[in-house]
Length: 118
Image (cartoon, rainbow, N blue to C red; front, top):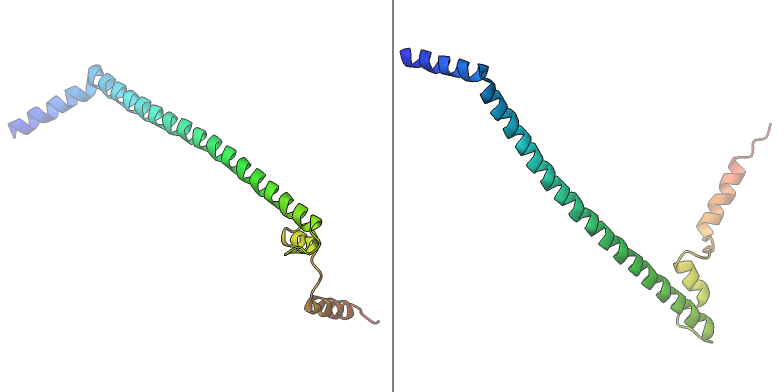
């Protein structure tokens, strides 16, 4: 019992001591500083990766654009291309594709059903 009282008294003095509080504060500040440095390193690495991916993405877009333009040029220059220019433009979404028969039937049905005779 006497040992427990000594331990409680020692703990009470330690909590009331400014040195213990200062050590805890310095320790907390150190841990937070180290964590902040690690996060800053991660952020810098991610920014570098982002720049690299952006450059790669731009290069890929340019390559796709160049190949598409080459396909268009070959289709326009050839008398009987494998894929006609109109089909290429429809594939790449640059020309409207012709409406299907089902879409035309649905359009006429919806127009007829929207007319109200009073």
